Image (cartoon, rainbow, N blue to C red; front, top):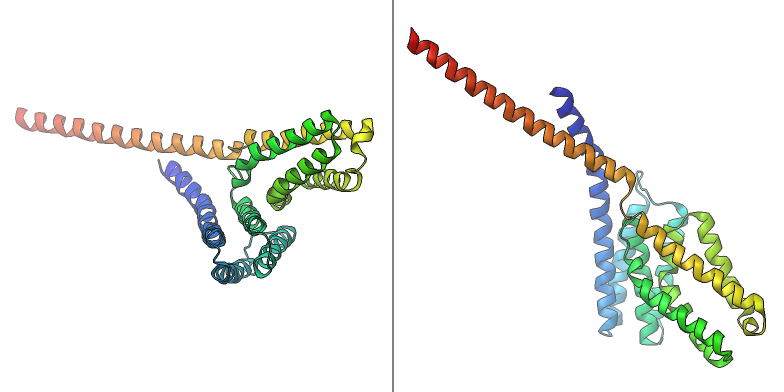
Length: 261
């Protein structure tokens, strides 16, 4: 029984810092959501003030000795932050400001939400935009192709910082290679078979990114912890119930013996 309780306590000690870590980062994503809502209301100055507050909180976490944020992840968030702040300070298109703020929020969320990140909710928009690119290529319409490609890239840029945080290095490099190809060869893709083939490869990698994350939404280690915890709790409750039943039975026997005397 003591070993069981020790095991349960050890599990709670392990999981408690994880919960604290998630709650601390939830505060940061909450600040960014506040800033995003202000941008949508065209209150850019207030949104910038909230961004400054976010920056202070983020830097304080970065300087913590037990920080789980890597230098690469800090760089990604910092670049997304600078881009969002710059667009708010300039006379940019409203949608550009909203998209840049959203990209920052999704990137910070990707840092803590490893199994249900918000950027995954953009899958339909990303794939629908890519589908329009494919249709334009099938029609061999260069004007429509360039327009739909711009739309796709705008949608993809919203989740790009999140991908740089969430994906393994080799997959992140592959994403960057695809973007470089589209930027360099977009004007000749309709004229070559290689362009059509590359578009198919990009589509496959996009589907792989979204489907792989979905498959890993519940980590095996988390399932193991949940199973062990459930077993420990069930065993503890059963043991306590059995001890209580045994104690009451012995008490009744003792009372019967007393009456017989």
